[in-house]
Image (cartoon, rainbow, N blue to C red; front, side):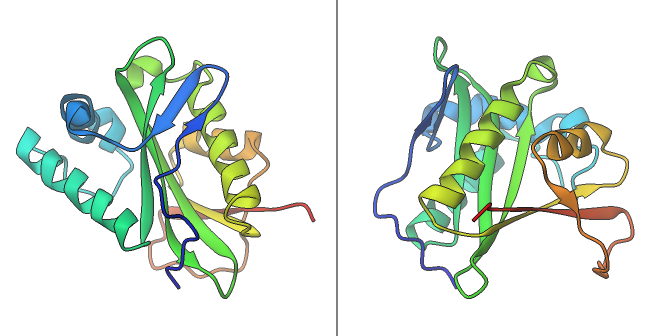
Length: 177
């Protein structure tokens, strides 16, 4: 189930972005992200109240990589070492060759193509490096920006799946074989 074929944390570099493992120097920006009411509007999580909560979260996601349970990246522009958002992979299934993707971006950086570029790079990583066939994404039915992003990158809404939460939509992207 959690058999990621990675020994070192992968860094992904795109035309404008560096997508890398979070470090202690990212705590303030990730705290701003995890405590932002606009970012958390459609997420089913309690916002972080203190940077210490964010530190504990970062320790957990880095441990998840060590145990091959997840990959959580900080997203930044090449010209600036400031975290703009995050993107992650989790819920890996070797049997079904699939995983789930999640992402978030500070509101000031939305609608600039940043998450489109990051998501495109990470989906390529899933298909070419992890050699998985399917990526799943879940989003709130009212989160129009997330839905539009997924559709832009050719994710398709999954029909016929009974989800536990009627407010959530499931999308998938298949590797073209």
